[in-house]
Image (cartoon, one colour):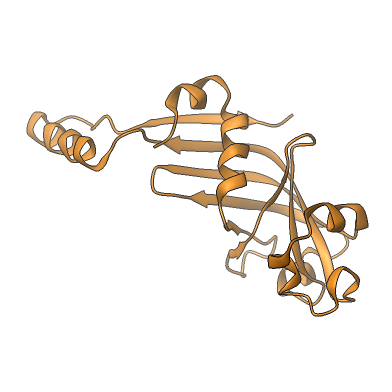
Length: 165
């Protein structure tokens, strides 16, 4: 369950904490004809940047081109959802490739860190919205039943906005 006090007091810190624990987020493309795709985030909380390993030959890299573009990043968990808007760019930063390298990443790139198809994407968020709930399934069901009986909106969580500038 999400910590609603932290959501109110420091949504950015809470967001980066959640991103550290997720296996994949949905990442958009500046070409809105393309669907969002699952990508494994690598968090650099110090700079507020989210990195992704990918192939230079991917559709997403082709859509970004040299100028990059504005995209959405979405996190959807049982009791925590977030949608961020920001800039996504191709970045061949070898230091970042080294920093986040793992056996999981190595499984995708036959040539390891020097694979010619390996590159990084750098997502710099501008703003976002976060929705979270601290309700267990029984409390959730109670709130829904109570709301239907009293013709009111259920109290099942909180929403907050976050700015990164």
